[in-house]
Length: 161
Image (cartoon, rainbow, N blue to C red; front, top):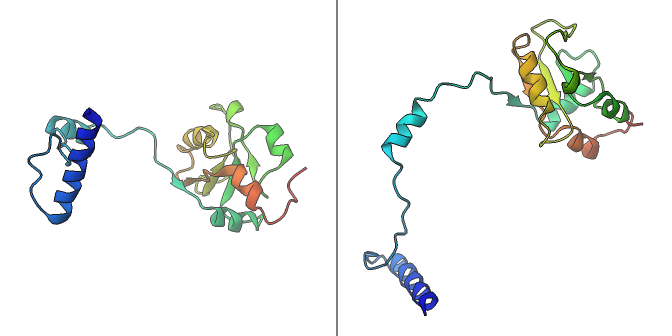
């Protein structure tokens, strides 16, 4: 019986909405409750994250960079050396997140733009490498779809064993 009452109230509410009559007689509200001012002001006053937000590189952008070994943008592969050996984006440099430490140095000018990827969108390794390198390399993008998308869309299998 309660279920029928709910269905009837919903039907009346939809009908009233369609014909523009008042919805005050309904036992529930069809509008969202307002955001509490205290919550809104707390969110607005939160300090900015100490970690930078990274832009995302598209597949097309990575494809363009991968075609030229001497391209000014460098592609960084954050996966393990084993995964890198099984296949990688052409002309990428392997900087495994698992072995990254404070003494890891890339022999590149700090003005070099970087695109960093790992295995797929759920892999945190590219973000770890980007965060570690961001102090030295301010122009970093993430190819979040990573090797998984590249392997599917890659124009040639030349970098796959």
